[in-house]
Length: 158
Image 1 (cartoon, rainbow, N blue to C red):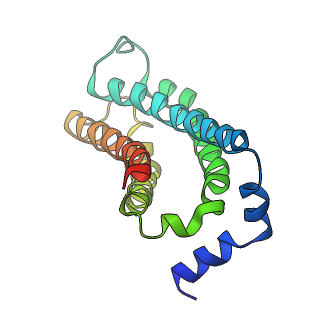
Image 2 (cartoon, rainbow, N blue to C red; image 1 turned 90 degrees about the vertical axis):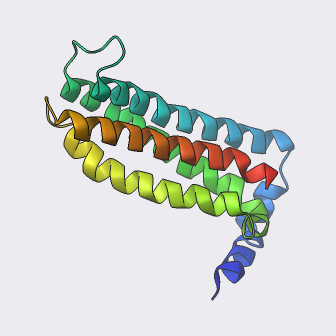
């Protein structure tokens, strides 16, 4: 089964027909949940990234404490993104197939998740990481998560 055939199958499913047959406000609610999920990821990542590079008002706070305190928000945000993304995707799956921004979003998301659960997690578990590595990681993580957000936003314009 090709990816296009899979997308066609998803779009013709009972769940897809149910979601697609709902009032437009139903879709708007999932769009809002999607945005909240993204905010729950970007806010803590920005906070910890600023701390990694030594900027912001949290320079006196422990990096490990900040990272641990905000980690739960990131995973809740990711959960909301996945949940709402499914309901946004399924009624129009075949429309997403040829969309470059859609595929770019998932490429950036995959890379962001790998970097997040490896380098970022390891670095934020150390109180005084190497400054050069910390700055590189902070910039990389911010770039990747913002690339996810911007490519997602451009899905409707491509």
